[in-house]
Image: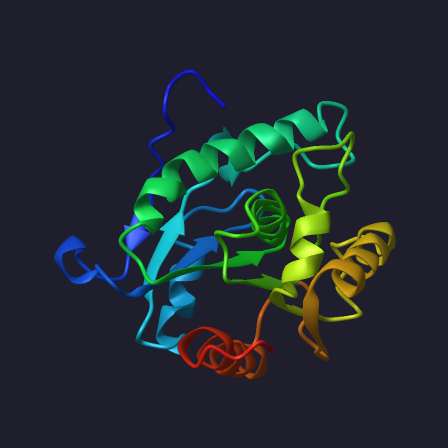
Length: 218
């Protein structure tokens, strides 16, 4: 954990006075994007949620990143751990005023969302992963996958098989992890490439309503 607390830039869907007791949905954007990117999805999500869209900590190019790309020379699992630890340091006190905490991540944001779920499985109700992937653990101890597996947590994973961005090795690992360690709902979409579409967001709305608002397991 960093020596100084990370105080991220966050866009909220409702004022602080109206958040207590509501389910929280944290939006985690992709590589070189920012916190404004995913807020356009808010009208397509259940209105019961308080939505918080968080800016990644590292400025890069036209936007921000959570950690270096996995194929970059400066990538390390330690960089992933630092990013997740900093995010949790911010989220943990915030979560106390909400009835549940769910995460929605796009592309690299899905890697962040699944990593936080694996790091703090008891604290996260569900993850929505859009056109993204999960990160392999190097070493042991940061991810609590054995505990997570026993909890049967619901995870939604939507993607297009023709996505030109997420490489086959990432898909293969993510599929193996999700099949083994969580209760995954995997949906494939056509003509979406590396993006989201209205059909997928309708499924996300239904999924969140089912597993969070109604308390079902899948």
